[in-house]
Image (cartoon, rainbow, N blue to C red; front, side, top):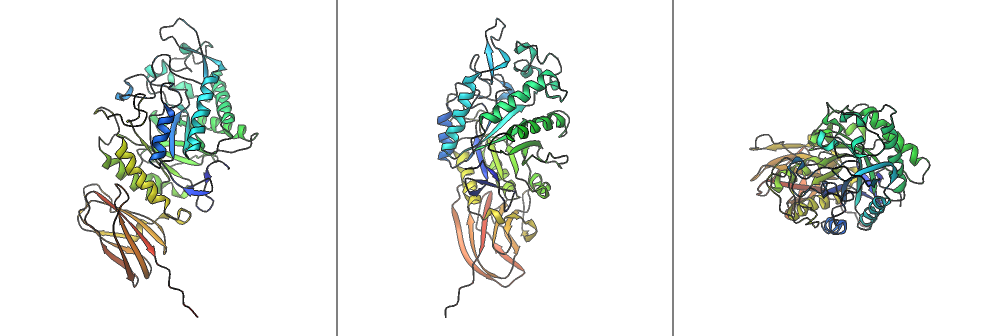
Amino acid sequence: MPPIKLLDANPHYFEFRGRPTVLVASGEHYGAVLNQDFDLIAYLDTLAACELNLTRTFAGTYRERPGSFSIVGNTLAPRPGRFLSPWARVATRDAEGERFDLTRWDEAYFRRLRHFVTEADRRGVVVELVLFCFLYHDELWGVCPMNAACNVNGVGDFTDRHRAYAADDGPLLEVQRRLVRRLVTELNEFDNVYFEIINEPYSRHDGTAFLEWQRCMIDTIVETEAELPCRHLIARNVHNRTMWVADLHPHVSILNFHYAEPSAAIGTYHLGRPVADDETGFKGQACGPYRTEAWRFMLSGGAVVSHLDYSFTVERPDGTAPIERESPSFGGPEMRRQLGALKRFMDALPLSEMAPHDEVLKRFGSMPPGSAAGHVLASPGRVYAVYLTGGPRVTLSLGIPSGSYRLAWTRPTDGGIVRTATVDHSGGWLRLESPLFADDIALRVDAVPPARRSG
């Protein structure tokens, strides 16, 4: 099978193993490969059981420390001596006990990476491999293998951590390019992989930070794969929430936003690429806000929801760890069940024909402060998917052609059908009243084909 690619008939979505698809995740905090203590089989089994088909993992060029960002049970912060980097660890007498040789590979790392991708492949899970990460503060730079204090090569000998991602043809850039070539070559045979260049580079200044360096890494991927059998998708992490995208490298196929708003999908729709809500968080300790974010984004034309789920820890790799109050996101079995319902709803749509069409929706009655009237994804004249928030009941009108239509009102919490009906519509605006609901509800409207005449 060729690697996951953009859907030919509608490049806002994906084709994976011959079928149109979206990608939905509720995954661990990115340490599945680099943390040797994490049981990746139990983790992937949990994703597959919930019908989720994406995981995001960091490549081992960056790690965190216990307590970083108030994350409890952070898989991206391995215990001392349990961090697995692509570069070989060498024996030293420094306080951390860990230094790396940037000219030598740790083959145990690459075996674990291949094992992870292979097991994900067997479960139909796509792996977003994040090659690098923004260095948020000096403590994290202080334990980074690319820092001269943490390697035996004298590479990265500067106090300004932002220089780690400078396109200056220095020795660190060549180390990074060599690593990208190895990772791309190592994973070339797999159909369930795509690459993100760097996580949250805009944390310094704005979305234009490190663009030249990112272009260099993208070119390295493209040049490497030109000599290999397969070509993989490349993602760029654009910004938090939303942003107008300019200066887009022609080989970038996926636009990643964190904590994405519907405008991130709508405002970049003209670029003809899948748009991702690539990380969620900071909306409290309940399912509702994250479920609503995911549905609003997907029904605005998004193709990926990657929820950050802190219920996955080394002690609980099956995602059953309690979420501590200080954790900056939410997760657990119920959250994954609800996201599985969104995945099934989207998969049942004719994705090759679907596009945002909020203009066909009018809503009447009260709305909660700050809410939108609703979102519509449609193949006009054939099928309409509508998402509404508020409640307890909504009156709406749809501007759709005349004809007969089947209606199915759906609970976003579990995908259950609340009410069905068939209506005959004479044209103009079709007025509908929803069933009673608590926070949100979805509606699918399908045109009923005219009955064929016999004789």
